[in-house]
Amino acid sequence: MSNSIESLKLSSLFSVEGKIVVVTGGGTGIGRMIATTFAVNGSKVYITGRRSDVLEATAKEINAQVKEHGGKGSVVPIQGDVSSKAKVKEFHEKIASQEEKLDVLINCAGVLIPFRSKATDHNDVQDVQQMLESVEDEDIAIQSSINVAGPYFVTTAFAPMLMKSDNASVINIASIGAFALQK
Image (cartoon, rainbow, N blue to C red; front, side, top):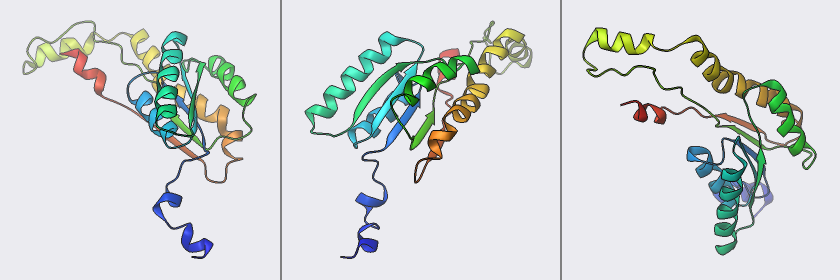
């Protein structure tokens, strides 16, 4: 089979083996599952998040699973906060000191500040309006700094490393899972 045909096999076309990946919010939830998937399939995955203990435990668990199943990938925990440009720069520098390029960046860190008042009857317009109006300026500022500015600053910081990849990807994840906690 020629190389051009070989490159069209699913195992080649969709392989992530040997890729360098960063997953913000990689210690829990969707980010953790994404990190696991990449590592099991042969990628070196840097997971970032605010809580070092959670990141360390996640990396240890995933690396044990990968090793147990004969995988080639790994997970490296790097404490990092996406809530400001300065904080993003800190964890970017740690990763950039270890890697020349980045193949995949997944912005998965996110936050939802709970409503300060709850609607007891979701069919009552006034009750729902009161709940919506309970959000304060600082709630929106915190959510925006992490959910909107965070992916921008992370992507901007890693852009030079992404440009060194033959086929770079940036994936932004959003979840409404936190709304389940609102009820």
